[in-house]
Image 1 (cartoon, helix red, strand yellow):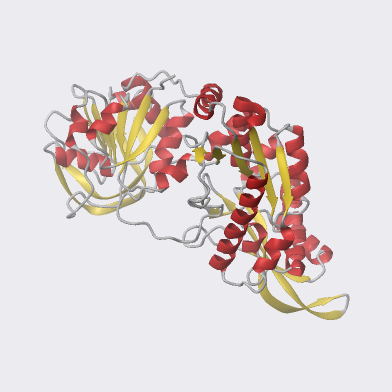
Image 2 (cartoon, rainbow, N blue to C red):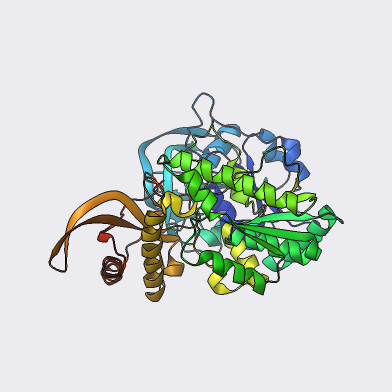
Length: 511
């Protein structure tokens, strides 16, 4: 089945993925392409509409990103958002000028009656603005459809050409009725019917896998996380026992996790090879303190173990991976090269000598969509809503050397965090919550005796996709319960601290 598609051209906005996510939530299939995607490539997809994202540049900057002006003549509706509006204005003969006062944050706009994007929306609206330029004069043939105190043209439209633009961000939660504005564009203006559902995805993905694999064999490296498991269940649904899953216990998993994963996959009837390589991983981590070296050591060891096990199982034609849509689009730098913050949490890929063709059934999906597919496939709630866990596991939640003793401390403390967060009803409200073992010892008093023991930091963040995150304002009663239990139950810990850093500037994981 070919889904109606909205194309989002990415000009570098931090909210570009959010536009796509909002459209997916409206049952509209959406793809993100770089701003300089060739016009022929855009047209080949036969989009029902095109959205020009925001971006950090000014259209007057030398080298500012610009799309092919032919997008305005493809006879499909186009919506420009913030930078996209300024670009549309400059390209079609309007005037863009520096704003007397940069607008960043909440603003109030006044809507003109009868504008299609604002159907059934109040005449005054609080919106989220983020721009240093404004539209001083719209292009010929455009009508002003909204104004604000600082922007004479907060929205504009050319009904005859089906071109629309907003100087604010409807995709962010801070904009009142933002989802309704996007709904008006895709349903009212573009005429979409809303044919993107997880039920249809499961059926189509199953058919695609059967066609791609044919009579071949597939090997899948299971991490125990949602992505790889949903991918494996989909592939097994398509080809049955011609799939073999390999789970490697790397010794840095959470408490009882290896056993739980083994039992879970038995219930799912997935063909599973369970490999306990924990001793090998700990041996290769001995003496390693640098975070990046830890990650690379764990990734290289995984490849060694996986390759050995795969060879022992016979010839395979395909490798299954739980690649998601953010992995695909983040591999394309929109404006200049991206900086590497750290190696990816999960194994980045197998070496070229392992000549597998890839099966990536989830590469169209965002994380929340993967969870919905998991529910569609009958996976338990407890598993589907499991918080993300880094590939290097507890090794990057121990600052300094990873030893069996230090692993036992952080593993026990982390288990207590999870238990108390669940008990308080916060688990699904948080993106992640966990314990970190710090390379710090401090003086304490326990049982009238002086102690000099280790410190645990608690990290709890709220996020939609992990790209940005804010520290969670956990109730004091919950923090008290966590701290009290850790100090009383984890021998070797006498101090608990709470991390109140957001991402950015911090990362979610400490290493």
